[in-house]
Length: 312
Image 1 (cartoon, rainbow, N blue to C red):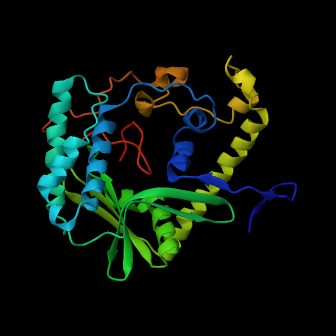
Image 2: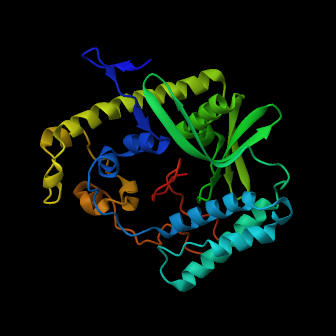
Image 3: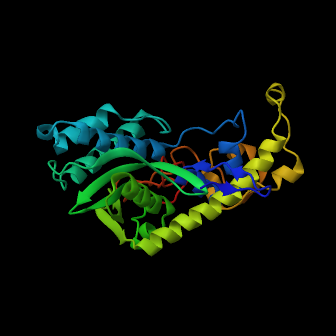
């Protein structure tokens, strides 16, 4: 059943990812820059800590695609090295230092895994819909434990996540709901695997807590959809976009900035005076710990494909 608009006509489902929903919550101006403005404002330079996180995720996904007898810690190190992303580092020496550290990280982690315990999915896209939203996202790993599924999300951040982080994550709850509906198998457990510390933060949802998360996602989507509609009603013609047309005040007010410390890590910082005034500039490698021996990296946005500021 479709959501009805004010005029009684069916309203189009709000198509989104958990990342889009979280962006709306974090900063509505960044949401506009990311999802509505076309052409999108130019982003800042890539972040080194994002390069490390992406390299680790890619290596772990590739490891599970290897034949059983090649799923070894050595192979994980090889895959990390071969797929290393060099963007954002101060120089080649810093890149090599973090490559070696990430290599040790993935090798140690896969040594704790059973290579024969085949996941149900790796980098698996899952999706579901309600009367309000059509939401999809990519799960790092989907395990089967007994008769149930478990959502596994890898983390490479400086701060080890807690069970509260697992419990409160809209993304993990949405992945659990979508996985359960697609696979026709219960999925209530969600886990955050923190590679730097080797810890696992877990939460066992109930049907009620999952329903609350989905309802919250619908509430966020309704707010964002209303703002999207207002923006699109104004949106400049294609021929006007090239010359740059200012967003009128009544539309801009729907997408206010959220100035604060996280603005230092925003990809669109150069386009936001309030963000620049709220926090200092950061160099692309400032998200890395000061010394390679310190625990973890500066974390990135969670969810389906993270972005650059500290968080989980």
